[in-house]
Length: 481
Image (cartoon, one colour):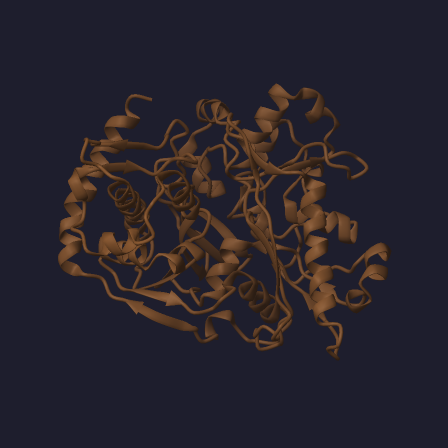
């Protein structure tokens, strides 16, 4: 299963990590956003969507013979919900995009040395992580905080409902911002400040091959899964790197789905010093993943399509144009900023509008601006690893070849399009297969390489100047907030 923000995907895989034909299902959904920065989904609704997806897979494959021996899953990082002593939700599932706790970022920065905490937890102080959200809940909703017995991710809540156990994976714990990525334990300094006991959080699996079994209720509902062994949920970003074959220091995965990210995964320890604009989490106890995330990716593209009434040939028009049309500068922070500045006050903006500006100009400037943000991440990543290959994936890039070309040109690097249709769920399967000894090592799995997008080096030099103007404008704007 791949439990995403915009869909639940599930399928059967064989022990070669190939999807069994006609077994896949997809349940579309969307998180609820509010004007004050809220972003989330009702916990019971989210769980029922997952149950529906499993029901659908089993129904589609009812005539298949053979046993389903294992279940692997991934889920979106940074989700948070509370449950009471009986396991009933006390909050909705808050997503990484919920920014209502943003004012508490400053509280954390005044209380702690952010650089030291970042190097210990792999996470900057930001509303996308648990510390700011937990402070917000404790200060502004004390009655909710008081009756909350445990704080969980969505994957942990699914485990509670299916197994009666909230043991979490190192992968999911490392994305909370409250986890020591070097010791692989909950961070004592943050727990003390937040007035949280370790018992208020999921227990962390003692080994990476921990397995669970369905409780009686769901074993009866799903006989085919009654004897299956379930692995703890891992993070979708980590799974995507594995599924795309990017698991060495020289390979980066660049993804644009609803949001965007550029990540490098490798076996080994976290860098001694994590660059200020990046995060660092764990895949498991022996592997880490480092990178940067953009809050605006495919979600920004959809917003532009819905609100600018773009012509059908918009991309074809951009393909014929020069870069940086009319000097327009777009700030891609409609959903706030994460990497690389982590500025809670950042908002979207378009500068340089004239009476001659049209919707195509704005779309092109938006495409270029996201590419510039990826370039910032790329430069910081190269301080700790040496990237030789970039594999690109995500629905937004598949829908927009022009955007993909712009990113290649800005980075000055060729992009290999990921040919794996569901790399996140495949990655969860591969990690599970490694843990049970079906494959020796995930970095020995051959890539499913697709089309090569060659960078235009002449444009790279021109984009470097445009990016410099964009960066200066960003700094000028952010200095006012």
